[in-house]
Image 1: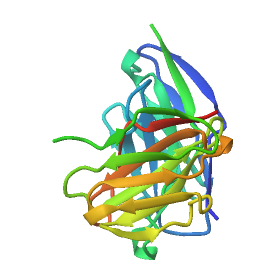
Image 2: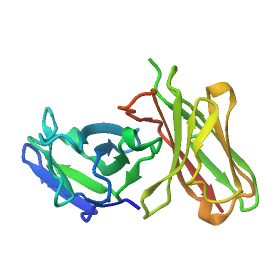
Image 3: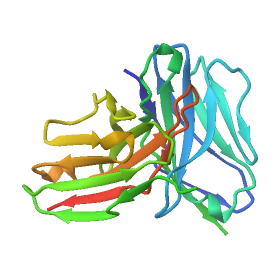
Length: 118
Length: 114
């Protein structure tokens, strides 16, 4: 069974600085998707970034980028130029490839609470 | 376009009572998922509908939980009778059919069983 581990329950960063959130996972599958979701306080969970395992290039979305190390089963999220609005709970999640069947469920880490200090 | 909505936002019930949670997915989304986050633990998958059919219900904890999706539109999750360990936040998500399957989440229903 697949597992996702986020070992940092809480992190903090100064506004405008860069922070990296860690995520490791375990799977025997070769094709899968990895996600970072963000849940601001009292608001809905939103997708931050997605990485397909077959792609070697790391995904980037504006100030958000990932460091995907497939052999090490590591998927960290880097937030550059941190803003106050980045304060949220960040969840790392895993999903099997759709080509492997109809298993579409997301498998989640515990989450990392990120505080952004002005 | 309206997002995923869930009702109620918060429910407090006593052990042994029944509660029904509702999820309205984004219009046109055939996939509908239920997840639950118990305090201090990971978010866990409960089940997945494709239209009105249960595609995967491997995460349902026990037979006290019953999920339905009438006509492939909104979904309900009923807990009967509720136990203390059912407390948590219940999230609903929806997505379009297809490989990408980006799941859009509702705000969640916080269930407290006393």
